[in-house]
Length: 105
Image (spheres, rainbow, N blue to C red):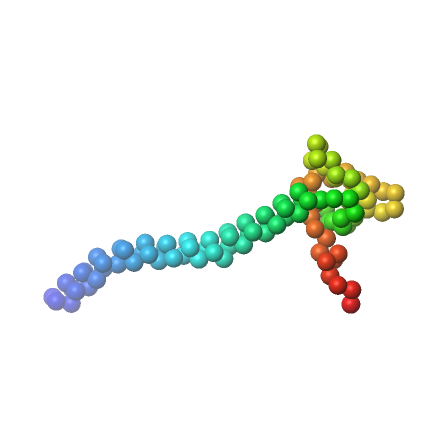
């Protein structure tokens, strides 16, 4: 009889622990998933806002090129992808060319 009473009392006290555990899971999720993604998006946005002629970029479609002109009014950039071949791309689909940052080996 005592065993049944003890187990009933233990079951009632477990409710607060569930809330603490859920809070801990949410904090860990935010620290390891949401926060790094926000930092990455901020870095990309800063790069897109600082685009200038001569910057080496890659478009969202995977096309590598060099910025020839930035049109702030239309929010577009002209990207030269080959000698004499220039395409116009929305500024939101232009990203930093990672190969331009690598030191020559």
